[in-house]
Length: 120
Image (cartoon, rainbow, N blue to C red; front, top):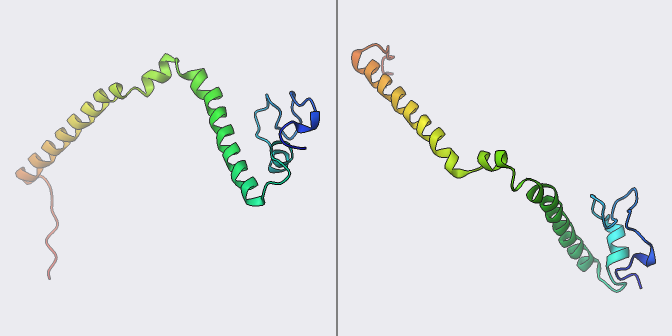
Protein backbone atom coordinates (compact mmCIF):
# COMPACT_ATOMS: atom_id res chain seq x y z
CA UNK A 1 0.00 0.00 0.00
CA UNK A 2 1.50 3.33 -1.11
CA UNK A 3 -1.21 5.38 0.52
CA UNK A 4 0.61 8.01 2.49
CA UNK A 5 3.56 6.55 4.32
CA UNK A 6 6.26 6.90 1.74
CA UNK A 7 7.09 3.20 1.97
CA UNK A 8 8.40 3.46 5.49
CA UNK A 9 11.30 5.71 4.52
CA UNK A 10 12.32 8.33 6.98
CA UNK A 11 12.04 11.34 4.70
CA UNK A 12 12.30 14.12 7.27
CA UNK A 13 15.38 15.57 5.65
CA UNK A 14 13.93 15.37 2.16
CA UNK A 15 15.99 14.74 -0.91
CA UNK A 16 17.35 16.73 -3.83
CA UNK A 17 13.91 16.76 -5.45
CA UNK A 18 12.11 18.10 -2.40
CA UNK A 19 9.12 16.68 -0.69
CA UNK A 20 10.41 16.02 2.78
CA UNK A 21 8.37 17.22 5.68
CA UNK A 22 10.65 20.21 6.25
CA UNK A 23 11.53 20.96 2.63
CA UNK A 24 10.67 24.20 0.92
CA UNK A 25 9.82 22.57 -2.42
CA UNK A 26 6.58 20.66 -3.00
CA UNK A 27 6.57 17.02 -3.99
CA UNK A 28 6.79 16.31 -7.69
CA UNK A 29 3.69 14.82 -9.30
CA UNK A 30 5.36 11.41 -9.36
CA UNK A 31 6.38 11.63 -5.69
CA UNK A 32 2.91 12.81 -4.72
CA UNK A 33 1.12 10.01 -6.54
CA UNK A 34 3.45 7.37 -5.14
CA UNK A 35 3.50 8.63 -1.57
CA UNK A 36 0.12 10.26 -0.98
CA UNK A 37 -2.47 8.51 -3.13
CA UNK A 38 -4.03 5.05 -2.98
CA UNK A 39 -3.25 2.62 -5.79
CA UNK A 40 -6.77 2.70 -7.24
CA UNK A 41 -7.02 6.48 -7.82
CA UNK A 42 -8.00 7.56 -11.33
CA UNK A 43 -5.65 9.81 -13.34
CA UNK A 44 -8.19 12.65 -13.26
CA UNK A 45 -8.62 12.38 -9.49
CA UNK A 46 -4.83 12.21 -9.03
CA UNK A 47 -4.38 15.39 -11.04
CA UNK A 48 -7.15 17.18 -9.12
CA UNK A 49 -5.70 16.15 -5.77
CA UNK A 50 -2.18 17.16 -6.84
CA UNK A 51 -3.48 20.61 -7.82
CA UNK A 52 -5.10 20.91 -4.37
CA UNK A 53 -1.83 19.81 -2.76
CA UNK A 54 0.17 22.43 -4.69
CA UNK A 55 -2.29 25.18 -3.71
CA UNK A 56 -2.12 24.14 -0.06
CA UNK A 57 1.68 23.95 -0.17
CA UNK A 58 1.90 27.44 -1.72
CA UNK A 59 -0.42 28.88 0.92
CA UNK A 60 1.58 27.26 3.73
CA UNK A 61 4.81 28.57 2.19
CA UNK A 62 3.45 32.12 2.05
CA UNK A 63 2.18 31.89 5.59
CA UNK A 64 5.47 30.56 6.89
CA UNK A 65 7.74 32.92 4.99
CA UNK A 66 5.73 36.12 4.88
CA UNK A 67 2.73 36.32 7.14
CA UNK A 68 4.30 34.89 10.26
CA UNK A 69 7.67 36.51 9.72
CA UNK A 70 6.59 40.03 8.81
CA UNK A 71 3.10 40.59 10.17
CA UNK A 72 4.41 42.52 13.17
CA UNK A 73 7.13 44.45 11.30
CA UNK A 74 6.34 48.14 12.01
CA UNK A 75 7.93 49.39 8.78
CA UNK A 76 5.94 46.98 6.64
CA UNK A 77 2.73 47.67 8.55
CA UNK A 78 3.21 51.42 8.12
CA UNK A 79 3.95 51.02 4.42
CA UNK A 80 0.68 49.14 3.81
CA UNK A 81 -1.53 50.96 6.31
CA UNK A 82 -4.47 52.49 4.38
CA UNK A 83 -4.56 55.39 6.81
CA UNK A 84 -1.10 56.35 5.59
CA UNK A 85 -2.51 56.99 2.10
CA UNK A 86 -4.54 60.01 3.21
CA UNK A 87 -1.63 62.47 3.20
CA UNK A 88 -0.20 61.48 -0.22
CA UNK A 89 -3.70 61.56 -1.71
CA UNK A 90 -4.36 65.00 -0.23
CA UNK A 91 -1.02 66.29 -1.55
CA UNK A 92 -1.79 64.89 -5.01
CA UNK A 93 -5.26 66.46 -5.04
CA UNK A 94 -3.81 69.85 -4.03
CA UNK A 95 -1.16 69.64 -6.76
CA UNK A 96 -3.84 68.78 -9.34
CA UNK A 97 -6.01 71.70 -8.19
CA UNK A 98 -3.02 74.07 -8.40
CA UNK A 99 -2.17 72.85 -11.91
CA UNK A 100 -5.80 73.27 -13.02
CA UNK A 101 -5.92 76.81 -11.58
CA UNK A 102 -2.67 77.73 -13.36
CA UNK A 103 -3.95 76.28 -16.64
CA UNK A 104 -7.23 78.17 -16.34
CA UNK A 105 -5.39 81.43 -15.57
CA UNK A 106 -3.08 80.94 -18.57
CA UNK A 107 -6.04 80.12 -20.81
CA UNK A 108 -8.03 83.15 -19.62
CA UNK A 109 -5.08 85.56 -20.04
CA UNK A 110 -4.27 84.34 -23.55
CA UNK A 111 -0.84 83.12 -22.49
CA UNK A 112 -1.55 79.77 -24.17
CA UNK A 113 -1.10 79.64 -27.91
CA UNK A 114 -3.96 77.49 -29.14
CA UNK A 115 -3.92 76.04 -32.65
CA UNK A 116 -6.51 77.20 -35.16
CA UNK A 117 -9.52 74.87 -35.46
CA UNK A 118 -9.32 72.45 -38.37
CA UNK A 119 -11.54 73.26 -41.33
CA UNK A 120 -14.26 70.77 -41.90
